Image (cartoon, rainbow, N blue to C red; front, side):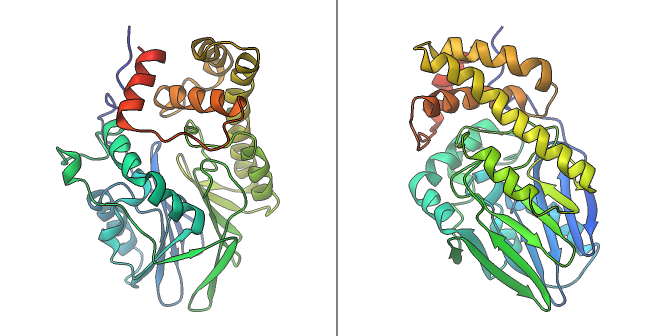
Length: 319
């Protein structure tokens, strides 16, 4: 039987958690939905990830206002994906930060991603009947190449590009006074990694750069907040295992001239026993196999996903 497209069948509301992972550092999580981070400085607040819509962003703001009345002055976006950024207007933050590469990806493929994500995640866009009603693309006011620091009063926040992973423009945000990191979708916890715009060869190396910080806590892109080094390292290991377990069987098939469907079967044989209970696993798998197949054939830049390409690929693999 064909599976429902992407997350079209996932309509149940998720339970929200708001967890302090360091002094005045919070993780907003929702059972595998996109996470948001909150960094409270001496005189202002930085939000990490905007959510998909202003309505979802207002749920974050409600939690923020339960712990501080300081103004939100900065919004840091770890990458360009619509479900992370289209809620930006709710925060009224004067400074929106992305990597320079992430900004270029908004220009290159942001419009296509906006439509694609709208079709993939109807629950995250609840109340929006048509793509024309969805908030417009989010553009940064500030960009950087490798590293920049923001000072929220005396609290220093370091924003860094450590390498390609979930996308070519991913950044992490490190708060050194508490040794806590916000990783975006480079790291997930008991949630499938979406690899449709990823770089499988680079991803594990980027994770090891994160591991070198030896952080005390991480707010991952999806899944529970990671508090304590044991939980942090377990999540880093699980994410690497997911990425390599996806790529390796697909690459073996692709390099021998096998078909995409044969690569799909090989990937499922490897990944289903380990990851089938992960959040958004079935949603991600066809996109992941397609991208892994391309990368194995030396297509370095991920092809742009459109709503039409999404449907055609889904029918070919999950149909």
